Image 1: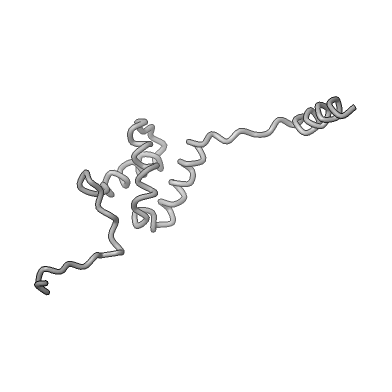
Image 2: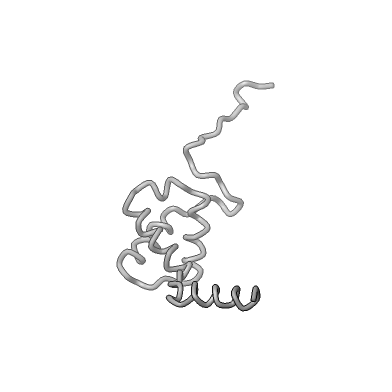
Length: 98
């Protein structure tokens, strides 16, 4: 084996993807749009969502992390639990038992 032909892996760099690698500049552009209250395309949302799992260095900055968390919370669309839900469940359980 030729020692000059060996390579090493930079584990601190994002993993290369088949399409040429993650586009960290695009992440910054989308995050700046979100932070500025601008709307982004569904394609940009999906890119940002998936890029977060592939390139953690993009989210080293705490401000970016907060924007990303706000984005995820908005995308998940959490809904409040109706106030009468526990009583409704208990009433149904009680009606089945009795």
